[in-house]
Image 1 (tube, rainbow, N blue to C red):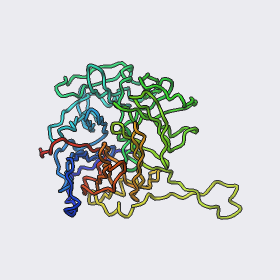
Image 2: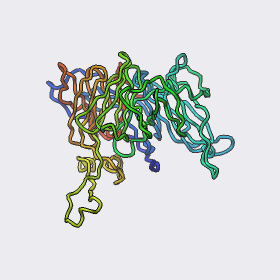
Image 3: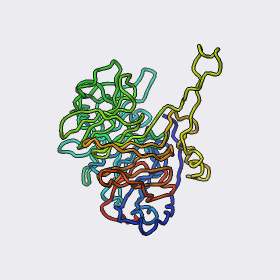
Image 4: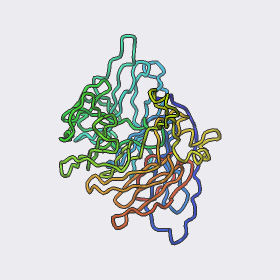
Length: 431
């Protein structure tokens, strides 16, 4: 993982474009989290109804190290780096977690602390668990820091309940509780953001979560019967919610990069869906799956002379479309969106700006062509798709089984860092 950078920035809402009266239709109150792990970016919540500027409704934290989300339970959890004194020693690490209620984003966030001495311990994995009788829980693997003799992985999960009114005390859970793991997938936003949500990795039959040292812990998700075992198989658990589970395998030689395997929990059956292009960073919102067209940046070049035919292939690094537009979007006086998205040249992926949307139950598929590399779907409901293009948010409605053209509903530097969005049942008030 790249080194964390600290940027302390208070975002200011930017005015929206004024749409003609004919284009103004009643829209739900869309709220979103503006944050950028693992670059220690401040986390802020904003809301917009599409008819005015985005409004700041919550200053969640001045540092963002990790974000985990559960759209069914309507919870966002933001982990922040901080210094703590633990057992008389100063400890720097992810100790504090802010729990955002998506149903009431303007309400004060609930704080959950996991105190440990980061000089001796480190968090190797982070999970959300929905444990029967205990509700949604945040769980981490807290292992020993590496020494000359190696390191000792966690032998249990350290967990905290996330429900309102739940006790603030930490609990120790056996690894068997990973059978209740939840997942909502990857977010977009360039090279660094792939670390913003730890994706559980699966293997075996039935599918089992791999802890940080590779030990398998069985889940309740059956293995797709049509996938034969490979020696080094590892599946990304891109979704595990009330409606579906979804897995991808970017390393498999037998699986095309445009495939996602979906388990419909209502029918109890697996099937393989294929996108019209190579995809990565799949994520889920209930039964809906969204993904981004992703290809390697390295592109083969034609051989320049016969003498090179027997040598290594020549390649060039492609630049995702829209770099000029990204360079014009200033997040700070010195930092542009291009600096963040293009990873200062470290990104190994090429993003065309094409987005893939799939209903995991009805199997309906839709595509959106933005022409801008920094594009991603941030929310899908049965009524509409909400997606970000650079520093603008769009809403595309489902009309008679088709996806209408997107209408811009928000724009500003705060939107450029929007990777999580949700509908609020009531207009949010600033706090």
